[in-house]
Image 1 (cartoon, helix red, strand yellow):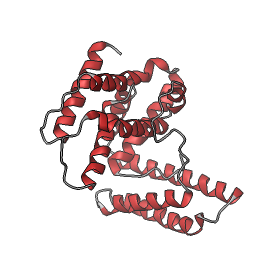
Image 2 (cartoon, helix red, strand yellow):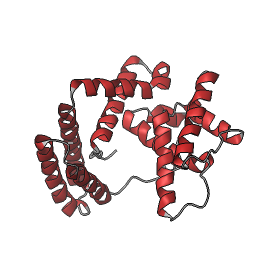
Image 3 (spheres, helix red, strand yellow):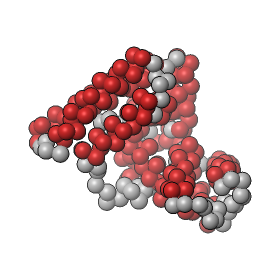
Length: 238
């Protein structure tokens, strides 16, 4: 990545951190600049880095009143964790993992249990449904998916072997149903804007990927943005 692009990335991170710190300026320079420069060189999209910063601040606020401004260094683990999640969602995890860029949460971490996964999915779907902004047809789809997931959750802790695999395959199908419904609920102009945003997120990876691989990653990034737009969870087990 060109030096100018890295410097601009660092400047935007500094600006975002300033806003999160209620206007208190914490400079991104010295070791902090080197840290954020590595994020830029790795290809971490600015939006993904900001989500990682948000995650740190959310945890910080839960601990009670803040006592001091947050430095960007404190956010590193959360930024890398969100980046790991983004890579898996868009399909560039394999290439990045070979480069030794996995975040702390991904290293040596076992996947979530099926009951815990279903619990989180149901909670997030319920919250999306409660917003009341998705339209009657899509609300009905969420209700149907939620009903199936509630039944699955009741027995998920005891399913093994072929039954467990069949349930996972059903979750994949339900995930596709939700994404198809979300796409159908978007205006074409909104969908086109999300496609452009997906391409921008993957900009630093374009030259590293074959065209067909990039096309799949772009679809993965688009799906992630659609989920984000509607507050939808990933129903399938990743």
